[in-house]
Length: 127
Image 1 (tube, helix red, strand yellow):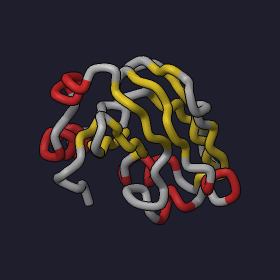
Image 2 (tube, one colour):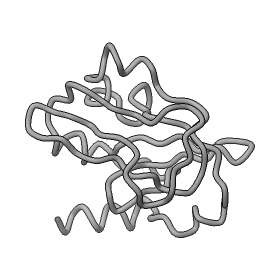
Image 3 (cartoon, helix red, strand yellow):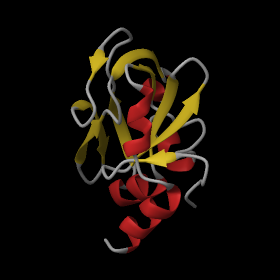
């Protein structure tokens, strides 16, 4: 359940590379499963600058509130507005319709510092 073509963070975000130094970011199946039923998402605004490892939003579930962390430095170019009305889509499609945001990377080289699918799988199996 861990797509091999994505990169991952130790904070349970996934990152998909897109053209023009854009990345799409979401939370992993492991994260949504741990959170339980997601009821609210707070995302950054288009145009916001974000820094790798810094909080840039929140995901609220029936169990808890969890911070979202930027996987790389960049500027937000799009957020998934569909999540305002339907945050539960993160539970059913975390790697597809449940994406959170897109950002233009300031330094595409930062992708090399993210986890591969196998590294992420090893990390979560040890949890």
